[in-house]
Image (cartoon, rainbow, N blue to C red; front, side, top):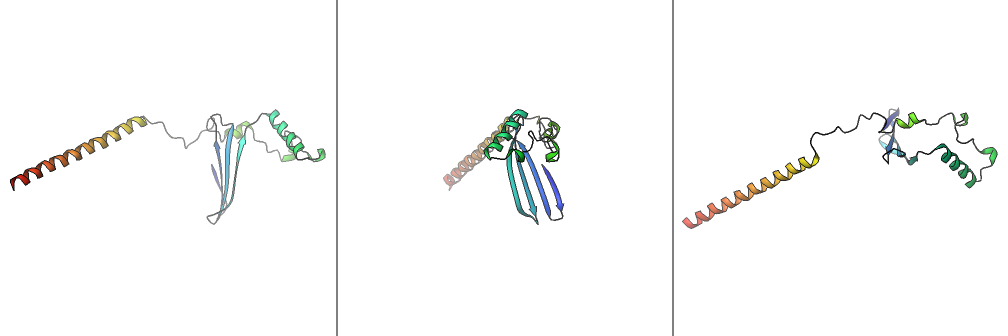
Length: 149
């Protein structure tokens, strides 16, 4: 997740989340806030593809939309025609928690959650037994007092 400040009243957040174990599919969210109000929101799903799959998808899209051959950019679009902005494996890895250090990883816990739940449930049961015993003793004493009256 990144938060960028454009000026004193405009902020942009960019979040990428892995949707599978290998991080081959990611969900991206971009939000822009001006003066604490959301003014733009965009989301999308990114799927890592091989070069052959990418080229085939680009050519199919050109054909689907009847783009004239002189207007088509060279696939796989690694030329300078797009400004040379092609994410490398290292760039992709920046957002992949499996290959990049993430300071927000939860630390491993020495105690299992089942042990904590067991102690919590056991404590509640002991408390209820103590309350029931106190009510029973109070009722016994009250019964004795009524007999002596």
